[in-house]
Length: 306
Image 1: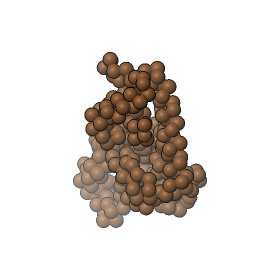
Image 2 (image 1 turned 180 degrees about the vertical axis):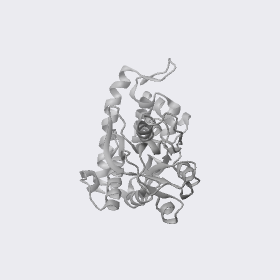
Image 3 (image 1 turned 60 degrees about the vertical axis):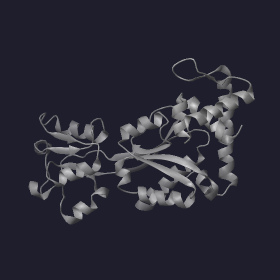
């Protein structure tokens, strides 16, 4: 019985699948099966009921899970307290929205590499709706996403916010004076994907003025910017991702007589055993954001151990 075996057991219990757990612990399925078989032989009990379509814990398996999670939690706490950060190994699945990838993600990766040189980051860039589902399904360890993830056991902490500005290609000839909502509704709008907060907010602004307003949505921020530069519509985007386009003049800012709510991002991760490194990465993200805006957030004690 060792930490790797306990970790494998816990992931099978969480995911309900030997195959999914094998992917999560970076091992082959036969290796995972062998670990659990050896563990069951050592304990002299069956930990999983394999008769159904989905693997389920037996009564003894549920009892063992309590102790396994405690041991993993204590193991993680021990490493954070005693071991040098450089000696802590593993892979963290970090997922971010594209807005974060376009702003401060490179600085965060640099900080994580300095603090935990033996930790590998597996990066996933996706829309926030998908990131929330991946976190719920244990496919990722931590997400920096728009909004929050509402599920028991998941910690949500406010991270940063970006105000949106209206931009358009100069070729559209947008007037310099502030634009009314009635006028805005006559222009095609390029924005974030359906069901996202910006899409819903913009739709609620223009629909009362003109139900026939064309709204082109995309899950790719790069595509939204490209379509706006090409003059296919106007868009509301964070200034922080448009410095190159605004400085070069391929996009210009204009005013609208109504504000679109800020994009509010949070760090979401599970309060799971052995999650000290994940929590520390969230803290490093707060520092990275604070350095960009010139204000230091209040940090918890985990980071002090780095």
